Each structure stands twice: as C-alpha cells, then as structure tokens.
Image 1 (cartoon, one colour):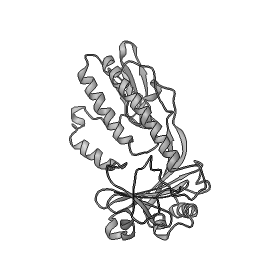
Image 2 (cartoon, rainbow, N blue to C red):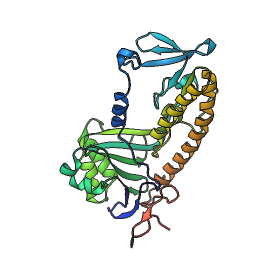
Image 3 (cartoon, rainbow, N blue to C red):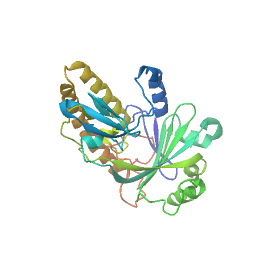
Image 4 (cartoon, rainbow, N blue to C red):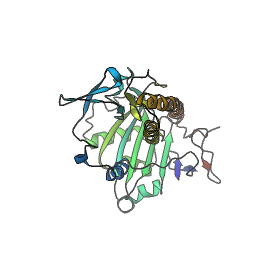
Length: 313
C-alpha cells in the first residue's frame, strides 16, 4: 500500500498493490540471497578484486577485459552489468549518462516502530509519498524495521554549493529550507534520520539507447538503459539477465543468442524509458506550483472517501 499525502500531511489517496505500485525489494537482501546460491571464489565462478577499466573487441568475436591491475583476460562473451557508469558500454556505444534535473537525497531510519514511531505511522506497512510541485518526500519500508527515505527535488546538480555533504547538520539546514512550510510530521523525515545524507543526482541515458551489434559483447540493466527510477529498473535488469541466460542456452552460437536477446531487450527498454521520462515530468514538474497532484494516468490511486481529489481540476 502506498499512502499519498499533501505537504500539510493530509492523506489524499491510497494506491493498493497491483494498481500502479510495485513492491521494492532490498538490494542488499537480494544480493545476499543470490550470494548464498553462487559458488565461492574457489570455483572461479566469482572473482572479487578484478575491477575492469575497459573492454576491447577482438577478431573472431571474442573480447578482452583490461583490469585495473593492468592484467588482461580474453572471453567469448562479456556482459556489461556494471551499472550507470559502465566500463563495458564504451565498447558498444558513445552514449554517456546526463543529469536529469532531479536529485534524490537518501536518508535512513532503523528499528522504526520502536525508535521512530512518527515515521512508522507515516509509512504504514508499505510506502508514503508527499508531494508539491517540484518537491517530494518518500518513505519506503524495508525488512527488519528499516525505512529508507528519499528527499526528491528538481533543481541544479550543485544544489549543495557551499555546503560540505559530509556535514550532516549543514545539509539538514539546507534541505529544511527547501521544504519550509511543510507539516512538522513530514519535516521529521529531514530532522530525525540516523547517520548522514546520501546525495544521489539522477542520471539517464538517451532514450532510446541502441548500438550496432558487436560480437561477444552486450549489456543489461542500467548499463544498457539507465532511466528515471520509476520502480522498474531492478526488475528490468533481472528480466534482462534471465532472458540473456535463456538465449545463450537456447542458441547454438553466441552471435545468434545476442541477436535474439537484443532484439527483445532494446525495444522493451526504449518503451520503459519513455514511460519513466513521462512519469518524471508528471511527478516532478519544472514548476513552482504547490499542486500535490499525482497524475492518475501515471500513478493510479483509490481516492479516499470524503476527501478532495488527488489532483487539481
């Protein structure tokens, strides 16, 4: 369940699971679960400490990894699953991520039901979003009583100019100034977090992002289709990985497997990137309006009985 609020902490709507809301899984928990089923270093399946600085296509459809320790290794297939700032992508594309005009500042609350009952009431058992114009506050309940907060706003990438991001109190003052006039219960998201703030300017790849087929090299996840965080990024990465694995298993050559995989993945990524851009423009408009609207076409919601609509007419 997602709770949607106005800046005065008035609940305007609720969106139930299955109606525009995709429950989020903890990335750490997902990694830990996957690690338990992955062979250890001793088998050679996972090799830590081998970060890649570049990839070079080679004749006969192979590819060479250039490691930061100046060693190299050749492989029949290299899959760039290395995120926004992929070191594999340049072997396929000249595209570089660009700032999307929106920043997410992350904060955390632990043992929220006992130590932060006000935050627990706001987030409920799912997520909470409060919004006005180009600003929003989001809470997301994770496992083990942990709540993650996202302080989202449209503005320059250097919004923190003159403030040391390691100075938690100075960052807090700068953020509180941006949300002046919001309800005190919502401002507790900025005042009571545990630890520091994590600055996360939002970057995106051009949409659609495509490339000409390069033998032995492909991409998946954010390395292939970095887009605004509309709740589908991790899901698409997992789907990419599953379909690529099935394609490799189901074709007699790697070239055939990559052609089949990319012919499905690239159009799907382009369509999702288009939707994510529309959602970002609708949810974080470039306006000073205090409208708390969550466009119904992008975020279907069940209005509360006897409440004002979630959007202005």
